[in-house]
Image (cartoon, rainbow, N blue to C red; front, side, top):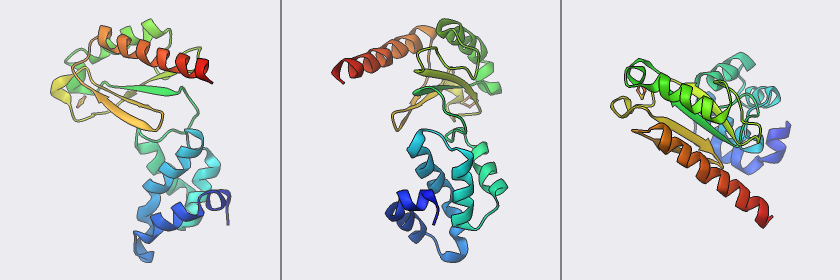
Length: 172
Ligand code: FES
């Protein structure tokens, strides 16, 4: 029994019960979510543990984790602002939006603000191409989508989240 199994025995059992034993590899995504819940990202050890549970190779599990922007292989900011820069969005100003957001936060793409609150990332299509600039915000166990954004609206959101982080600190 590995660490993930020791920590989440019931959840893992529940997840595996949803799939016939011969198709248990299909549980890879829910198990990745479970592992990510622990530390906010999926360390190599968790990849190995999931591979062990599902009798897959670590490469197979790692390739799923690497494919989806919802899984993170590194610890980063509390919130991830993931801006779509695929071609349709790029044609509607996504690159400029991303550039200005990075400048305002003082980070490069992929970087995290000094206070550890925000990581800015580029992602592929978020299925709202006609409403660019769009981004998804991941953090605090939630994913939210923001469409038809401007630099002012995203910075207002950043400010709101900063206040939330600050008020939590004061209340702690
Ligand atoms: S290309 Fe950006 S949402 Fe589709």
